[in-house]
Image (cartoon, rainbow, N blue to C red; front, side, top):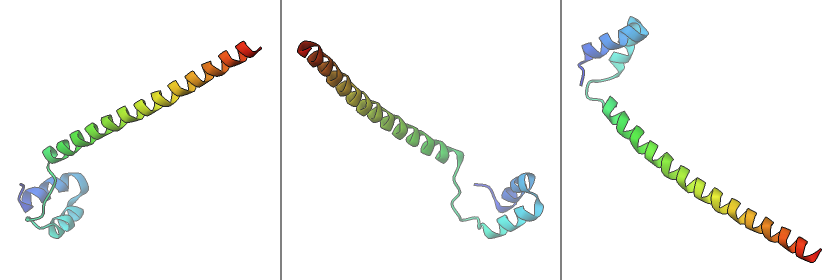
Length: 83
């Protein structure tokens, strides 16, 4: 984990000296910061959940539409046979 000075130097390049100084003062060195590896783990978990939700959604969609097509075919057959 970066020290306060390293944190300040890194921030100063992005947001300017004054804002970096304020953030560095407000953030103590014992606070927990998310690392890139932590964020990659969260991203991988969320991607997996999205894929699972997508699969369930496609399953429901196909089930619903298959039922619709069967019902429509049945109606057409009934109309043709009756007429």
